[in-house]
Image (cartoon, rainbow, N blue to C red; front, side, top):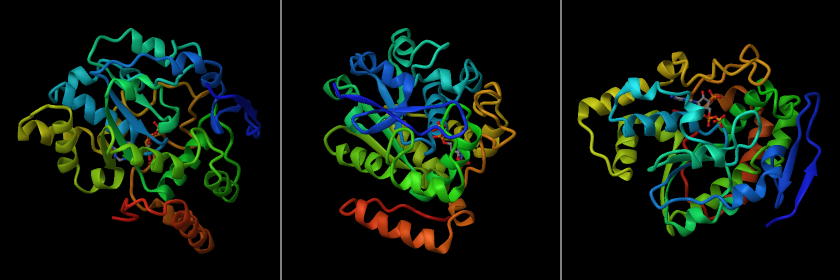
Length: 300
Ligand code: PPS
């Protein structure tokens, strides 16, 4: 479909992003683009959709615990990143996300960071269910900055000041936060999309988990719900080797630079943004998100 072009974003590390239709993606995904676009979704697929660093791992564990009726042992069957294939994943030596998904028995739960306009069309055509989690842009930027510091296969973020500019211009993997959130929000009334906010899950996990449970067509006892709340807390997931990425080699994720499960809070942006950056960001946000009625909570 779209033309792909190389984008020079690597600073220091041997990494490179390429573009599809103006969206920077990992070069391997771009090389594999026709396979990704022709992915055959099934009507009973559930797709977890997020902009990076918005609580993907968290909602994956919640969804899996709901699917497994709260059986923690079953959730320990595989690393979280392998339980729900990222459909645009294409970097060897692992099989591509498309191949991993093809090998899964139905009903499948899959995952993507793709913006709505780049989603393989079969997801829309088959009326699949989508679970979108959005996180406030400032905390998302902070989390992404630390992730790019420790992730050895993504471009080096440079200084915080440099990264601030990179992020607001959308020159990061999977593109602009603003366009991503807006794009999925605008799809929400046309398709089966449950739109969740990271901050709501943090404030009232049981309430949000119940919403997810109903959306998935499940009905679990209070006791099971309470167990899911407990097992999916930041503290538990940080200690859980199946969710904390501790088995990923240091050559890919160097957790001595910054842990994958870093803080898991709302409002860490206040420790990073200067007053001037905050004012400028608010102005940009107002313009870019005009007409989008999402009420992001910026601190708890
Ligand atoms: S990725 O790499 O895009 O899949 O990352 P993602 O999982 O979307 O986001 C990582 C951030 O989510 C935080 N996180 C949590 N917060 C609260 N509770 C739980 N259980 C939880 N699990 C993951 C994680 O710590 C990252 O945020 P920061 O702010 O960097 O700590």
